[in-house]
Length: 426
Image 1 (cartoon, helix red, strand yellow):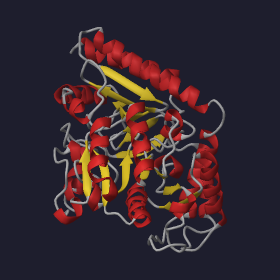
Image 2 (cartoon, helix red, strand yellow):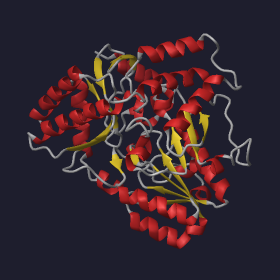
Image 3 (cartoon, helix red, strand yellow):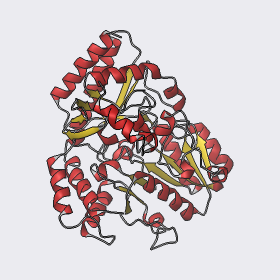
Image 4 (spheres, one colour):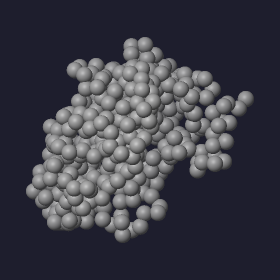
């Protein structure tokens, strides 16, 4: 009998390219039919056929409190009653800006936008406008949104589809992007020595989440900070995924390194579309209307979306939140590793805060090349077995996973039992 998921997917393909509105949703990497979700509550989602899953995707990170958290839902509905959008200033935007400036180290001014892609794209435009230089350094496997100059050896959906760059990006645009190896401090130093006067900025995911979970080494980030300072380049931390996910101050708080600009998204929208970029006052004062670097957006700082983000952040920033969340995530990872290794399956995992990665290799990877050594076929087998057991992991071996505050003992125990059953028949 045809499932409703299959029926919906066939129908979607008639009017939507590939049947999905974002490539990684298509299940191309793992095979099979995407799940069309009807609702979510706490740590659970239900698909169109009514099957329930413990969710370890969390809308790719923003649902740090779980699905449909009552306080977030109330904030949205209360705010929506007063109007959905104005294209004009609102007081709630100021509240969000004040919270972010207080919470994020080095963020003296901040501009709200509608997505992470918008935030990173504008941060790099700002870096070029501030320095008057053309070149940007990014790192292999890091994904910073789908702006033209950044889709060069990118991670996330592009990597999942086996096409780490994108058609439609003119060579003259891509030519201003220098792609280096993630976690290779010496290569970075050599590049600055050769072309330092041309480099406007360096953008990095301090914990990469779009080639799965790969943290930067402290030495790599320290070298990056020192070189940007020495050569007058702008250091941009892309914390769209890690911001308010791995710790109160994001990844920069964990590493103790202050970037010049930070980009945020995901959690600050609480499940709705919000992004932000901010940092040093002298850099941010180059953005319009104060300076010559233009950025605009009718829906920037949308009051309903900001209300969702504020309600989320007020809980996330409470004392002890990340201690509890980090313990849950580590417990999940430990249980998966134990289940696999008990049956001799090469498997590893790593985590910080509510963000984690699982790998079918003996140790967690430290670079794009090591990520590519992971057994993708084994991951696909695990993914489908997990679906059958009611566990929803990211449909790609190249995406990080997420645990929410709503995941409790019952869900973690159920996941551990399911993993044991999966690997018992491996």
